[in-house]
Length: 66
Image (cartoon, rainbow, N blue to C red; front, side, top):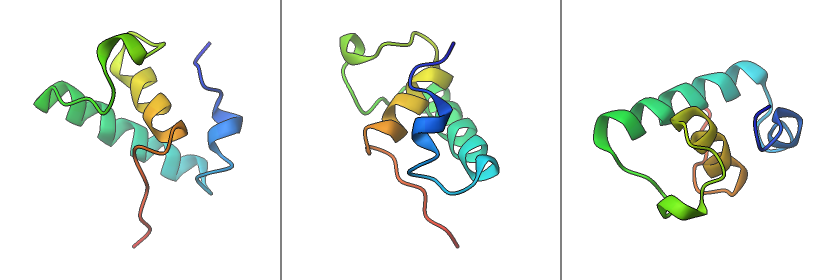
């Protein structure tokens, strides 16, 4: 089970599709550039997908609608 829950994050992002796109894009950035918004020990998840969820939940990553 992923932490934080998707239901909690959907209060910040309107659409499930936009959420999936944002998480996928952010996790790919983490892998490619090895850039993280928080320190290693502050993350609950070990994988980039979960870490992207955590960053969106804490407001470190915002989604801009075009």
